[in-house]
Length: 154
Image 1 (cartoon, one colour):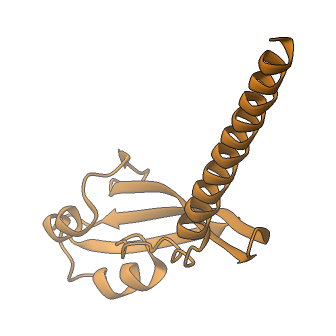
Image 2: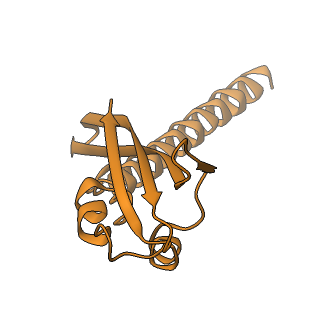
């Protein structure tokens, strides 16, 4: 009787060990399949910046001394940050614009041979800032009499 119980326990422990081993193989296969599917990524393009009216080129193209009116300036650049009158009585508009440009890309890959594998991953992140100060003076006819722009990037 004891021998039968011992054989029963040995046979059941072999079945339990085999079930656990089979479950581990199934889990490992599922994880490997998942890694193969999500491990390969294509590089993401860098973030593009929209065209801004606050560039040196746009300022030069838009503002013409004696021609461009305050209405034209409002339409192109919007409301000024500061509007004052200088010592000679001319109206002066000041624009102060700040932009932060962020670019990033990430690549990754995964290769496998049966159950052995190798993974690689790289990422790049850059951030830069740009500030533009635009000062526009208007004459008595509300037309541009003078303007200066300064751009800094860092």
